[in-house]
Image (cartoon, rainbow, N blue to C red; front, side, top):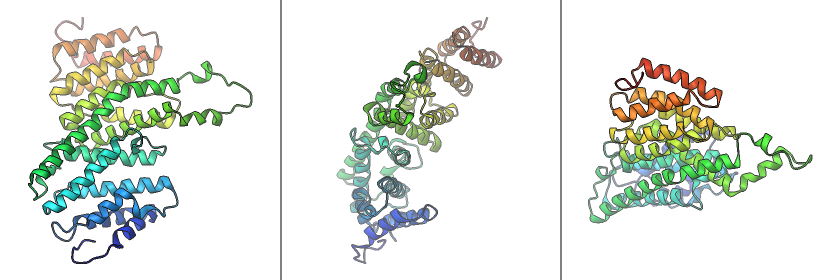
Length: 375
């Protein structure tokens, strides 16, 4: 596979089949073999058969579980993307076009509204899809990042430049879809799973069980929840690996803050944990100067949200956000955050009032209010 001098059409399907059937403790070694096959022994000698096989899942059809097959296929796709954008696979124009076509096909798959792996039933599949989305964003949207695809290949044809530009636009559109749909999806999560569901919606009959209620998981609201979880998992990956520093990603994440705050508490504990993880990572993010105001607006919207869990989460986020951006916050934004926290001390929910008092003390100690506004 790594040598163009050997004609072995059976090799790529066999390798991918082995990847699919390998035990968890052996998977990493086989994924390294996938990366080696994509890289090749020398520049331009990587195997395009592996790329085509990953897209078509030709070598994964004998896996015992459809879910396991899909998750492992996305692991292999991530290995391919990592190798293609690592700077070590710079090859001929022909190889470049094959690699870029592979990445474009992945972006199209992730952006498919009807069949995106970010909204699959399996959380394992959603997690792997989020990793792929983050890797593609880091490769094509971070101009000062570690991966700069325009410089990774010898190919400089007009066709290559056009594909790179199209890839950038499609990757940006994928992230933009998160910001565009997050608010509606977060409201759908609460509509499907309101926090007081047992009190407001008693069982229709004595024969109805909790598992019966879970059959609703197949409905359109459940799909929105799964899609939102996929988006949140992508946000986690962007923050975890630093791709959030690029302007496009940071703007999208800042616009998603109100939805992330609103999704902190739901009866689906696994989903709530993903939302909490996303917010935890965002507390440590330093937003670019141009996006600080947008992120602050997200915190302010959270502090005024109808859901008290969102207001409580916004208080925790606002304190960390103000501390990390103390030297770049303008006076008006600083005062607006301070006044919103003061208002929260009169919140009808006691938990919010308690958090507001703690947050307010932190603001006063840190001089969060401008001039004499603290008085």
